[in-house]
Image 1 (cartoon, one colour):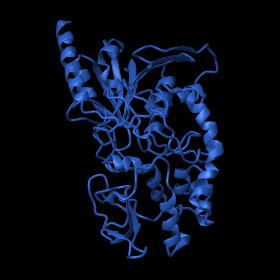
Image 2: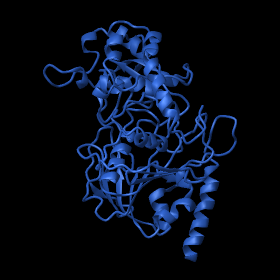
Image 3: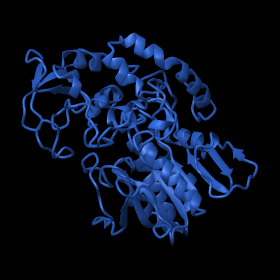
Image 4: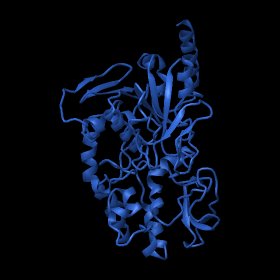
Length: 426
């Protein structure tokens, strides 16, 4: 017991010192501490239990991975579950990863991206409690909130408690974009939320429960039991499912949190994270979205655009082994040049300009590989969450007209969102 005590004190000291590197832009000078840093408050929930943990390279406490930290504290982790890009975060977007044994920890890693989206009963056979600790970027088509939903569903189906270590949302200071139409539901958008939803993972999990957006294995009803604690922040028992959220400290939705670890191979800078909600739309078009360059989601273009625009050549690299237009000269835009201010809303002007300049408008949007495709089959529409945005671009609507069309549903969502916030709003 004394050994565990001194280990805990040492780890906590290093965490606090390391936390001084976290940054916010705003009135508060206090350092933001993600939920995983509150070790002394959740250690007792894991002690003596077989733990299954959903994690990747962002699951850090200062300079130490969460899995390593917990193992040093005597926590028995028997299964790791990994999202898109894998446990170590170096796989391409969309790359299929098989179950394997992690060479550094010796723990089985189950990929929950591709053919398998949530843990099976066999995966959880010997697990007593589940932990979710992933750094999200607060964008609907960034697939970690879809992984969160499936992970919660598996916990419910297998009668397992779930603990979420909350982390700040780097895009949590605004709400914008089209709200997803449920007929366009896919892994890049599963719920009727806007592209930028302004919530942490923990707040989003509360909303999934509170809005009854999760399927329940039994129809029986029990009274919700909600208690707000100083450290845990949120604990709910809903239809016999227990969810505990370990809150961040010193975070508000006015915070501009600078990520200490890149959340995926192609979001390597804070500027890329800020621009991603606006430029990821190009993934649904024939234009390069900048993968294979030094500035993914800040550079975008196509070989057939005017050669007076910015030129670049996508190359094969880690996280983009086969990017669009590999080894071809493309012409387009480079937001990394610093002429554009950090966005505080989604900007579609680049889509409008690219569509207007593109010579083959019939083939601007990537076409589904099927005869007589429906609007739901277009990847661009899955990203947008509707068919209207495509039609608005084709018909020449202005950016202001497009933004105005989002407002009625955005206003409804903002009312819903308010009910589930764990932190002061912007």
